[in-house]
Length: 136
Image (cartoon, rainbow, N blue to C red; front, side):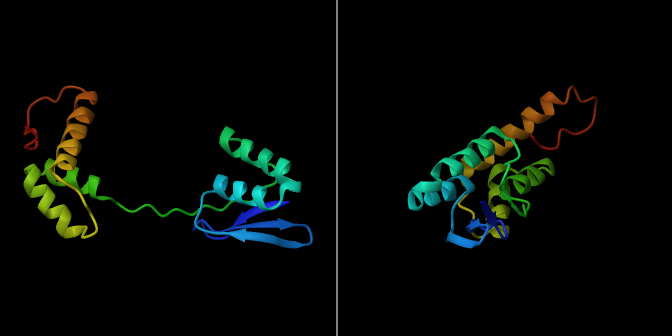
C-alpha cells in the first residue's frame, strides 16, 4: 500500500499492488490519510501507522511523497529590505501593497517586521559605527 502525491499540490492517491484504490485532493498528507481511512476502514490500521511515521518525523516505511513547494520571496522580506534602506513604516507599506497586490498587510505588519529586524540585529551583537539603516 502506498499514498502518493504527484506534484505537491495536495492531491493524493491510495495505491495498492493491483492499482489505484482512491484519490482525494486539496489536503495535507495527514488529512488524506484520514479521508482514506474513513472510506476504507479495513486498511485504517495501516494508514494510521503511516500517519505516526509522518508525525514522528520518521521516513514513512511504505509511503512515496514528493512535496515540491516553491517558496517565493514574500512581503515580509520586502518590508525588511525597504526598512533597512531607510523607509518609514508607511512608505514600506505603500511599496509592499504596490508590489504584492494580493497582500492585506497593514501598518501593524510593518511594525512587526521592523521589530523583527531590530531583534535580529540585537541578536547579531553590537554594531560599531555606521548608519543604523533608519531603523529608529
